[in-house]
Image (tube, rainbow, N blue to C red; front, side, top):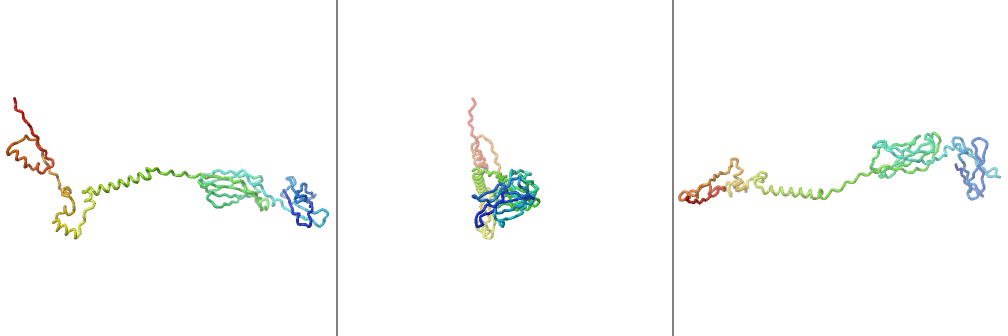
Length: 301
């Protein structure tokens, strides 16, 4: 413990003498602190300190009976603890952290101030802890980096100290950043959408060229002008008015059936019989007519 005084306010600097006691007898300071050649304080070892007894001081100038200062001090109110050390952070659960530390004084005589913040916070959050060296943070995000620090002072159970210790060294936890999603390859981002668009365009083009599907899906809706055009210009011919080809119009009829043409192989004929084949309905109207083969007969020996 250091007890210091200011000895520069008098008319001239004088080596002052310090006496101290808890109870009688009085003792003189055993190790003075000097500023230059003038006494400015006294250092007390642990054997000279009893923090739970009233400490009495008498500071006087030798040869000057009227110049002295007497004071009684409660040392427990003046104690500044060492900064906490051995800070550790551990997981209590998936969403809770536990901060622990140690101190050179009994836990029942100390109160602690815990400060913590994440890497996205602009300032510290504070929490006071009484009579224990442990703090639990109930809700954390593993993707954030948390920083903790602690300082201590004597609690009201052991004194009325108002001065805090120095801050402890900081300890950190977290900072597990999520992996960045890999960028999609060119095949998924460009080629597939382009292929779908191309296929859609081809499908629309094919639908517009299929006359039968187009007439079914998009039939021509008559109005007064178009009905007049149907009667006057097309003389009631619905197929020509609607733009549908004759073959398609016939194929859309419910009783439509294609003509059958029977094809047979016959020996070549002459005269009237040969002329009759030239006027055959099959040869004139059927697209499936096949001309009869010609044979050459060799005479028997």
